Each structure stands twice: as C-alpha cells, then as structure tokens.
Length: 259
Image (tube, rainbow, N blue to C red; front, side, top):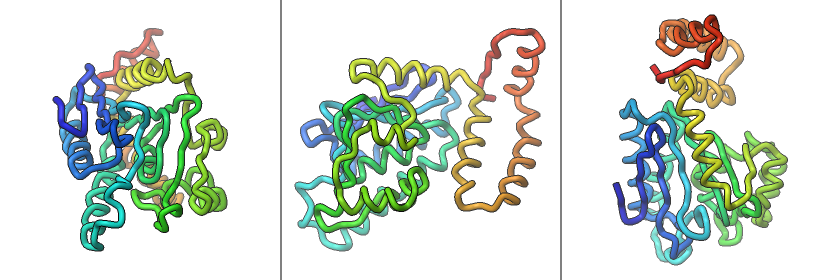
C-alpha cells in the first residue's frame, strides 16, 4: 500500500513504514501522522505482522515539525496537531509488537522523539540528532521530555534540549540511547536481518515484556512483581512456551509462531 506521505510495505512478518516527504526531509504532515496511526492499528490486529520498522526516504530520517509552516499556525491548530502526535506516540507504546527505528542522515526535533518512542533504534554511522526546539523558542513535543531523561538522565537531557546542538549518533550509542550503529550502506540490510530475527521469536512474550519494561519507570517494584506473576501465569499456557520447552528438550532451535 502507498500513501503520498507514507510508504507502507509488508515484507513477510515485518511491516515497513517509510516516511515519504524527502523534499522536506520527511517533516511531519497530518497525512503522515494519520497514516502511521492507521498502519499501526492494522498491524496490531494482523497476526502475520510480528515486527514494525520505521525509516525515512531520501537524505534523512525526519526533520520533525515543518519549519515552513511554523509561525503561521494559531494556538488551536498547534494544540490539535500535537494532540494527533500524542495519539501516535501513545499508540506506539500500546502496540504489543516491537517497533524498530532505522535512522540515517539527520533527525531533528520531534523526528528525534519519534525515534525515541520506538522500542529499538538502529542508526547509520555519521547520523546527527538535533533536539532543535530551543532554536525557535519552543519546548519539546512528541514525548521527548519523558523519553530522553529516562534513557540518558535529566542533566544530559537538559543540556541537549537547552543547547540544541547536533548530537552524533556515536555519542548516543555510547550513552545507550541507540542499540546498534552500522555503516550507512548496511543500514537497510542490518535492520531487515534484525527485524526478521525478532519476527521469528516468541511474539507474545516480546509484547508483554515491552509493556512491563515501559511501565517499570512509573511503577513500584511491588506492582511490577505482581504484573510479572499474573502475566507469567498466562504465558506458560501459550503455544510458544510449549514449543520452547520441546525445542530445549530435543536440542533444536525453537520454531515460534507468536501464539
């Protein structure tokens, strides 16, 4: 399926979503945000889809908000736009399937936060991340104020937001905010291989583990322990668990089906 501002392609168990406004460095548009939301809703209900990959067409991942329209929008329009963006970020966290961001070239503003909202980030060497909000007298939107401090701590997050200086992918990799750093020419290949590896794993377990880890930052130890107890009671009844046990006993690789 193709939409003007978003390319949607199903590659077996992997759903590929490509931001497709290369002439504006994939700056967000209402159509793009709504397109991603629709694709994620469909993926959530599609048992064949196990992993989602988000990337950008052209020279960059995403420049975030469209600078060309800044200063023209009224308060109510900004409020509505950020409301749509918020719905997308929440949906990315709610969907019980891994979302991988494949980032190259440049990511700025809310484009950085869109990547941070994914579960894993694979970045090309030489990529720059810029939390550029302060350059135009704004604060972060798209959840950056929540997501970044939890990855790198509050002091560094404040530094990056205050200065708006481009951050090399290598620095974020060292800080643990990026999972894998690969040569640009191998970004697509490495991302596809990793996505397929996850897609053939225990999908239900991944989905529940994702939710528990995200909840851990705002839950007590007692709450997480009880959630683990309840969810594990359900997980031992899954086909994937039975397959994993059988494979272990038979000394073979498990053939998980995400069920």
